[in-house]
Amino acid sequence: MKTITPAAEVRRHILETGQAIMSGKGFSAVGLTEILTAAGVPKGSFYYYFKSKDAFGEALLEQYFTDYMTEITELLEKPGQSGAQRLMAYWEKWLATQAGCDSQGKCLAVKLGAEVADLSEAMRSALRIGTAKIMQRLAKAIEDARADGSLAVEGDALFLSEVLYQLWLGASLLEKITRNGESLKTAMAATHRILNIPPQK
Image (cartoon, rainbow, N blue to C red):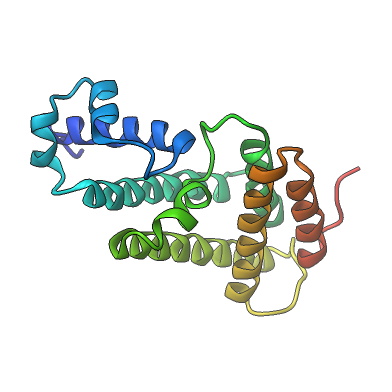
């Protein structure tokens, strides 16, 4: 069992606090003082854990994607369901968590993607690597569903996963504008069509 050092715990706490705040306000609008005050960490100690705000942002995204991959792997490997059921459960969870005004639980790739990609090459790279891993994991889920016979759709699995992920990212961005859930419902309907899975009545 991996032992977590006190320093690693403090670093994680700062990242989690920063994520909670930036999920609502964005990256540029949040200063280090606000994060450290909320975390209860002296400002002078910040640079022990992170070289700069950009380095903090990079670490924040890396931790977010690590946690996200753990979460979706559990969902996509849930026992007692077919591959197609697990795949649709992923999109259903996305719909449930990304609709509405509450910033907690929102996709950080959607919230920060457009903002930080032009601000920091390191953060852009973290976003690129993180989203690529998600699409690769979804491609495996598509292949698994084909293998167990629950999904009958032609085409390269990675291409399909990229199309679907891009569809949902765009829908989530529109949801931030409209806040009515319609773009996410449209994404769900399109997902059923793309994967040739009839919607449940």
